[in-house]
Length: 461
Image 1: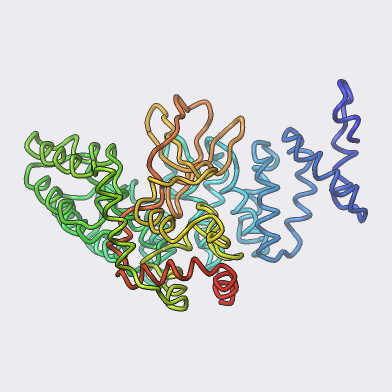
Image 2: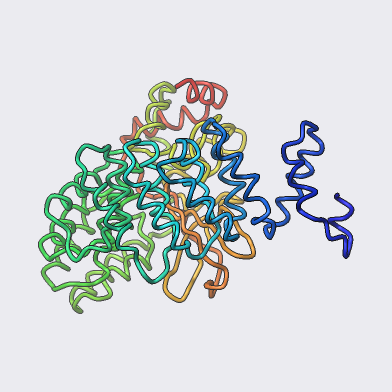
């Protein structure tokens, strides 16, 4: 099989390979799996194989693995039909979850219309696990120029359901509020409340995305502008998107004053700040220019501040540091992992003490853009309509998958990319120094500098 696959004119037929995916011989099974992965054009022939596997019960880890395998072939109409059928209520729970995860991971520039109808049906589920996956999938997919009113309505019903957990509701609203002509006072206040730093990172991130996408009235915009002074470093850049449509001088004054007093200002990219003020009157734009100037901190000042901070930190407590690492305030686990727990967007910190000193760690936390880690460097991707700053997670001939935040990813079609260049701003937020006390900062560093303890302790829970 390997010889036929690699020789010119070998014409290895899929019907000779696909049955071996279920072989008891591990060598044959692994070889068949490797060959199949090289032939995305075999999607139609594989639909029967995947249909059988979807029908079987799967544990969560196996479900994610199978979803990734199926997603690779999502360009085939037969696989698209299979996934649309899999997520409907008549299917077993794990089959629905695999189908939804495969849809979300599909490398498609635009989701097929059949998926919108299938997701609309899935959003009526009474099973919160299925509902959570359906909402996440609906938000992650690109639907082209035309919105699907039935899907938007289903998402809004989920977002308005006070009996559901906050993470499901905020994700549903983030996916659907752009379809509304206005946002009710009740939903607006609900979303603002969930941007607070005490809330879990995924919830406040989704609430921020929803507020940025919604059409807010002048009173709501003013209320949101006031809240920015307390916004966390993860949320502030997202929330500023709500002001890109501009406004009058009164709103601009409130916005500028809030940004002057926020402790998260250091986390803003200059282009984000410029865009936020671009459509305000000239006097407000001048205030925006002053804020931009304040972001241009001299490298020497940064070094002096770092040395002063390092000298003022105590030894720290490892146990308390573990609590800080896992807290919603620091939000470390959203991107970093120790042992087998945590995110994969940022560097693995399990053995961080082997390559970073206490000073290096402190600098990477306080000034993340000054110490970019190899293989985690950000890139700037420019399309006709958007400019993205993020860390590449996956690159193929058809698309690029970027992590643009702790729980935000964007899939960009290759043919829509006009320019890709190295980025200078880390997606790790600056400003964490203002989020943590000096004792908490010392405790966090003490925890990170004890890798064997850290890995075992972090994974016990």
